[in-house]
Amino acid sequence: MDNQQLVPRPRVGDVFGEMLRDAYAIRTGIGPRPLAGGRVPRPVIEIIEREDGLINGAPADHYLAEPDEWQPHDHRALAQVRGRVLDIGTGGGRIALALQESGVDVTGLDVSPGAIAVCRRRGVRDTVLATVDEHARDGRRYDTFLLLGNNLGLIEGRHRAPGFLAALAEMAAPGARLIAHGTDPYGTTDPVHVGYHELNRSRGRLGGQLRLRLRYREITTDWFDYLVCSVDELRGLVEGTRWRLTDVDDADRPYYLATLTLDG
Amino acid sequence: MDNQQLVPRPRVGDVFGEMLRDAYAIRTGIGPRPLAGGRVPRPVIEIIEREDGLINGAPADHYLAEPDEWQPHDHRALAQVRGRVLDIGTGGGRIALALQESGVDVTGLDVSPGAIAVCRRRGVRDTVLATVDEHARDGRRYDTFLLLGNNLGLIEGRHRAPGFLAALAEMAAPGARLIAHGTDPYGTTDPVHVGYHELNRSRGRLGGQLRLRLRYREITTDWFDYLVCSVDELRGLVEGTRWRLTDVDDADRPYYLATLTLDG
Image (cartoon, rainbow over all chains, first blue to last red; front, side, top):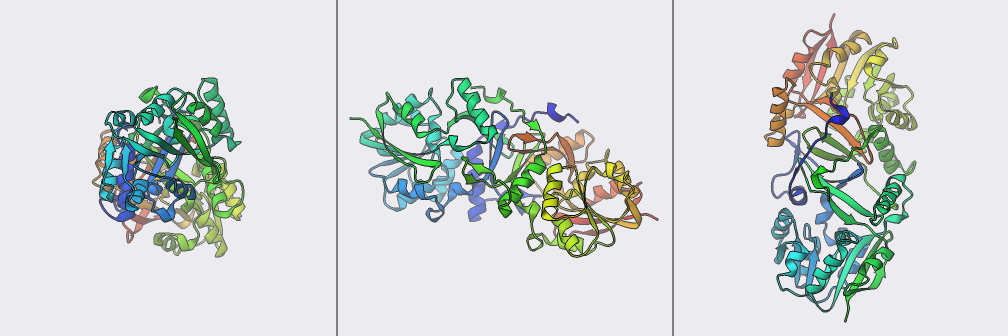
């Protein structure tokens, strides 16, 4: 037996897309469902691995949730939407679909081909397969940017934040707003998390700057940074950019909605 | 970014025990519940990693299921129990507890200290923290051995099966029976599984001889073999031992209940 020496190396692939495709099949019966033992439908679980060995699983179905299954802050975020909307990291398209159905002009953006395929099958009309930097070169303008479902994490950390926010500013119509869902990670006393936050700070990273990969069945993403930060840390990241932090709604702590408004 | 070079090495610990402790806290409210963001209860997911990089998650709550939540073959297995019973790999004790409550003299055996702790908290009176080989030296005798919840897998493969079955025979009263729940793995056409079965056979292993580790949060088990085999393969493994395959109930295919009876 090889024991600890054995290190599986899953291949890099479209984890998010394959997971959403299967979660969609389980929820709707459309398309082949994942099976256990070749016959029994198996729940679709998102597996998130952190660089320190922490691993967590969570049912993936919430990516396809209908509005009556959402958390309250999602509804409060959508109530603030105006004008043309870019839904960043649209995933299964739950937010884009709801906005589209209420007559809003919304574009769903994602880097996962499989996620975009699920969006289109569910009826999202305007989708873009690109990063925000790539899409900034397309010349479109938006009045509202959405980073829901904890997607404030896409800002990554101190290194990436200025470029990410600049790409959004490039696409921003005058007075545009960014509504982002974040989570304050510092309410925990769990030594596994507190120790990781300390390790991060000792490396010059923000405490909740997670280095993660997602795994689904035989494939993995590359390692990527995903930021879980406090409102104060977010304020620091926004400083010196063309955005200002103009509102924080922390009624559902540790979750919060942060609104950034384009300056000038 | 380290990308594929980065290899997390979780530490070895009592994965099954910690997972069951948390699943018990979620189900009953007894003991601290695992939290996301330090505040929101998080579902307890068992993560199973195969040596080829395949990874699957499944909710852990079924280990604590009450009889009305069981699969039908569990009830059919318990209907065949007689005399003193050893429940091997008792886990959260769901089987041992049900037998005990119906007046059966049952012992719950497990190698996980945390699993035994959950059993005892739930009220299982006779528990043993040991492998079957260790327990075979205790001089106890049983009329029925149970390997439910897919625990036929503990027979591992050709190398381990004779020793495992010999240890049970040592503890067996005259006419003793072993009732084991297995799964035929060969109904699938999924290339990820078919390819793994072929790899296994090319190494002289049985097709469904899985090399796995379980992970939960920051800990992992060592790699271990867990056998998923057809009834024909089981028949081959039993040949030349003191046991005979005397009944197969495959009404819930791909699952089956195999009954072995002590010879002579």
